[in-house]
Length: 196
Image 1 (tube, rainbow, N blue to C red):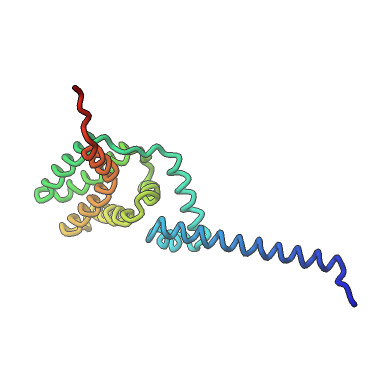
Image 2: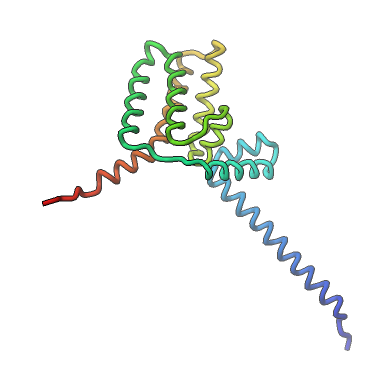
């Protein structure tokens, strides 16, 4: 009867452990990729294309998450949300008379809302990256609005494109107000205390 030398048993054990660790690491990376794809949606694919690879993109997306976690993003008080909504409605009503001006004002109002909520105002790409963490479904519309605004500054955008830019800004604007609207609905649903 031949016995397997102890050294071979140790080597086989180490190899099995190494394979198990490698399988676990691959599994964790897959899980992380799925989580990021699910959280960021189309922004995940855009970042992969922009940075030229999955590993770089995922590193960037995780860095965004970490950066935004450190921000103090707060919901608006109902009165502030109402003020912003009134400002938007007034802006929108001026579109027919001044489409170029309204696009500029829409961008400014969105920035003001972002500041009020707690987003830092870096360059556009930084703002879009920060927005993509909590609002991945609308970051592409923000990018589209900004692209039209830039073309308009060069005199290359027509009225229909300016209308689309305002619609795109409105989508982001509404998304940023959503938190306060949910809060208002909760407050409205709560019974008022009765004092005798």
